[in-house]
Image 1 (cartoon, helix red, strand yellow):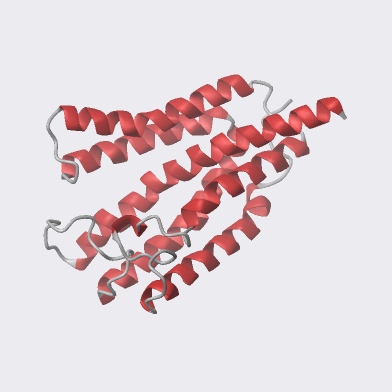
Image 2 (cartoon, one colour):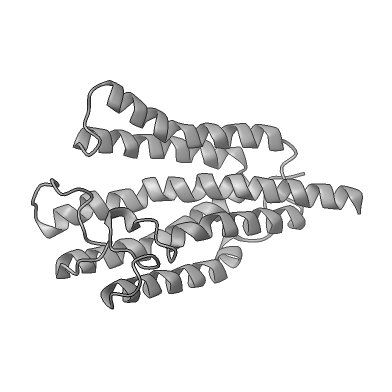
Length: 219
């Protein structure tokens, strides 16, 4: 079958993007209002709070894969696509391990640069795995993460004390608000979190596509 998806990325992404934006705004309100930390943690990185958009990635990734497979664009090489996606997933932690082996501190700018580089390389690999799904996930990733980056900018400028503006570690150096946003907001959101969305969404999307193929074969 062709890798060209008859369904446009914009059409598939629209509703998930609206839902994701709603969760982002709910999370922000919950943190500003001091609601349950288990649901709306203010800890750096979000503290694994139950209300957050990262949990939506597997759900929407699977849904995208299922819908694309049903449209007739399921790749005939699921094993190759899975291998590339797993490789794309492994790049970032592998570079993190290399940074620690080289003696770089976990929160150093050098380690951060390696993570960003790994995210870009991993993203390119993931997009090659199944282009039809990759394009949809890339569109969803930007639709999800651009609002977060903007929320972080406003939160940092206002010093709101949410997880959107808190430094990643207590010894994070003092810097101008825009520089801080560039380092903990814009760059991670536009690289590492895009990689995360495309790779994790791709794994679940490939699983859903395999199920759709099996269902069609047994129908």
